[in-house]
Length: 410
Image 1 (tube, rainbow, N blue to C red):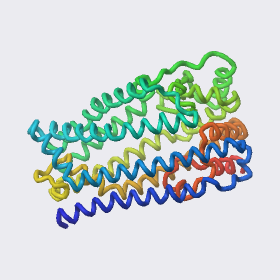
Image 2: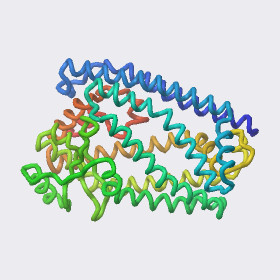
Image 3: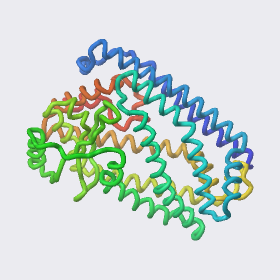
Image 4: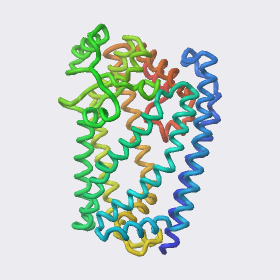
């Protein structure tokens, strides 16, 4: 294969992925007005259902336009040898491979952020605002962005530096050291994310003493779930959408409820949601997901080690001097079809886990309370009740509301 043919292969992959994703969105949009199944007839009042359709259509059109613009910008960057230009800037500053790689990805990141900020801003302050979801102020938006950039520089920069360094000193065997590094980092994030990262963006407080807290502790004691505390996060600072999640394991496990969840649901519904989260822990889903993530990371890094030293990757992007950072860009595109397959596997496993957690909540607490909570959350989030099966299969990490209700009532 010549550099020129590889270049056009990369372009073809980018376009094909875009076309498939767009066709899937178009197919899904045609089902927005489908008749609501009988089991879901009480989710939306008529006016709210029309609002949910309008919300879905607004997001669909926005995504179609923004992704098309992004594709055009990316293709222009490729055809104008943008990566070669950025590589030249990085090499004019330093001759150290690690520093060159950091500067290269730093420029790419800054450029991408500049282009994506107006898109994200429009989605939050126009679409989300129009449908009553947004609670974020402009100040919070830009402070969050600054914090994210700082974290990316510190954490992302450190990881990238070590991986490039491993490559420079070990060659094709770098993937084993990189795999160990990323695995340790993934484990640490699973263990301490709620303590280290969440407080940077949100305030977490213990659930206030009262009937809800007592009921939660009674349930936890009944199922043998050792729970030190239940935390409430100020999700209403940014959105009216509600959520709850389980994180960590061992002595670091914790359940976090969004304050919006507590406002939207009654006591029985909240405990049912918590029972679902406890189910994830009892069924070892956190550990399985961690192991699956580590395995897929190892597979990806091994594939990377097979191709990263090939100068054809750099030449295809117009760069004369082969390097790890240029090879990584080309490999990322070539690997995207495999990444789509691993994504399907992860989503399939995740949907199975959701069914299992629902079943746990059903057997240890109350299935109807969980169904009621799911319906309320779907209504308040203006969720799509009739997604196309292909969209569910490819992109959904959770079963649809209808699928979960049918399973719970079996």
